[in-house]
Image (cartoon, rainbow, N blue to C red):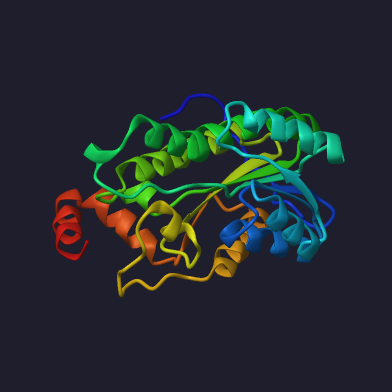
Amino acid sequence: MRGGPEKRENPAVELSGTVCLVTGATSGIGRATAVALGEAGADVLVSGRDEAALAAVAAEANGRALPCDLAEPGAGGRLAADALAACGRVDVLVNCAGVGQFGPAAALTPDDVERVLRINVSAPIDLTSALLPGMLARQQGHVVNLGSILGRVGHRREAVYAASKAAIAIFSDSLRDELRGTGVSVSLISPGAVDTPFFARRGAPYDRRWPAPVEPARIAAAIVRAVGGNRAETFVPAWLSIAVRVRRLAPGLYRVLAGRFG
């Protein structure tokens, strides 16, 4: 048991009128999330590498574009500074930027590993750490991290990607506990397969008949609900949480089923 007085959960955030920063906003989940937040009445800052695509989503979300390549060292801190210069504050941070890496671990190069960990782990942690002081001073804010079901259960040929999402899951869990009672909170979104260019970019298409990939808009809606309802973790689809519970309660059975059904 943890010692000390019990801490109260933080209140939910009303999105209308907030300043929201979305990374990885040029396509897929990030783009859908930026649009959904704009429709909810937020002032949206969108970030990504492709400046033309970023300008398009900024127009669609009625927001502002902040070009940034999170693969560069120190990029998280620079993006935070640009966001604060643009709006003076960030109330909601949505860390959507991410990359995959498919293939046997023995074939990965140090550059492959560093790129995945820098974009999927270091950048969102750096960005969060840079924006937290302002949120804490205002006693209001929310951080959303995009995880993955693979960060909770793992999968062959995606060891480094799964490890990066496991790191973000534990970071989210730990930070949410740390921030309880401060007015600032954290949500983790753990989707399964999503119909985005992610699979083509990771080096292998999604070739499973089941489960079918869900649309990015479904993840975006989950993000909006997570902020509005202060939800700790959301699985999309919701039934994916069953796999996590089976792995936790019956790891031997889980490994047998995973080996059989992949």
